[in-house]
Length: 106
Image 1 (cartoon, rainbow, N blue to C red):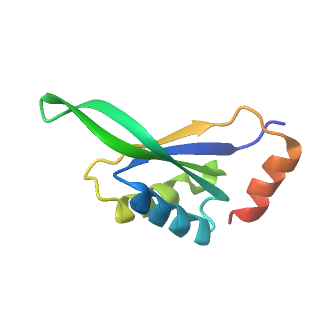
Image 2: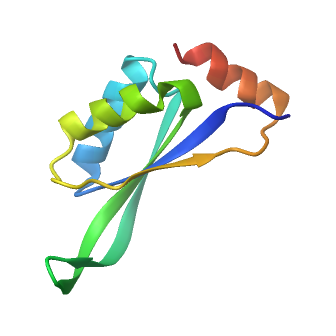
């Protein structure tokens, strides 16, 4: 089923931060669901050097029309000055699941 659904990939400093962000965006109906995945290692350039840190992945299921408001909310709650917030369009989803996301978001 084609749709306007999107997965939003966010990294956070720890589980508490990811859960706080996930709970807020779900309660605001900006996402139907938030998945928190612990134990991720990030290797990245920051301020002219390579850094390595432990992070937590937060995956949000939403619709494209809510991306701006969702990004704004994540930035307000996030501790990073430049948080990773990446939207990945869903090419397809089962009709039942897509309908559920659409029903549970504003």
